[in-house]
Length: 215
Image 1 (cartoon, rainbow, N blue to C red):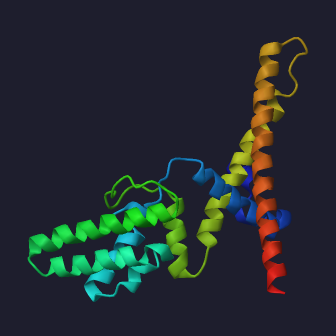
Image 2: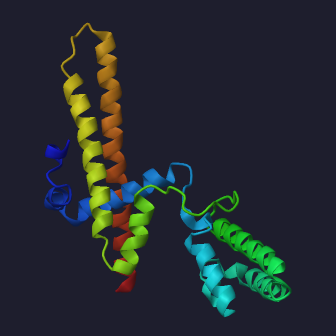
Image 3: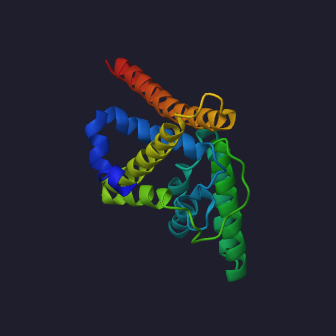
C-alpha cells in the first residue's frame, strides 16, 4: 500500500488540487460525524474545561461564553457567579464548585451543538490521531500534518476498495457466489466515491454562495 501511496500528500495535490483537498476534508467530516461522538469537548483536559479553569482563575466569564450560544449567556453567567462565590468558602467547596461549573458548561456547550451530554470524560483519553493533529495545527499555524493524515487515509481507502472490485470483476458468468462478492465490493466502492464527491460539491456550492454574498 505504501508504494501505491506515492507519498500521499504530493500524489493527491497533483490530482485536482483544491477540489480534492475539499473532498478529503469534507468526507472525513462526514465519516467522523457518522460515528459515535468521540469529540474531546467533554474531556477534563478538553478545550471547554480548560477554558473554564482559566475563566475561574482570572474571574473572567468571557473566556467561557465563546463556547456557548448567545441564548445561553445569562444561564452561564449565573452559574459562573455562583461558582466563584462557592470557591471562596473552602478547598472542598472549591473542588465541588469547579466540577459543577465544568459539567454545566460542557452540558450547555454540547446542547448548542445538538449533541447529548453523557458526563465528563477522563483526561488523557485515546482520541486517535485526528483530533490531536487538528488541535496541534492551530498553534503551529499549519495544517500540514492534518493534511498528510487525511490524504493518506482517503488515498489508502480508495485504493483498497478499488483493488477489491478490480480483482473480483472477472467472475464466471454462472458463479453467482463470486458475482455477489463483486457486486458487494462494487457498491461499496461507488458509495465511497459518491460520498466524497457529494460533500465536495456541497462545500463548493456553499463557497460559491458565500462569494456571491460578499460582492
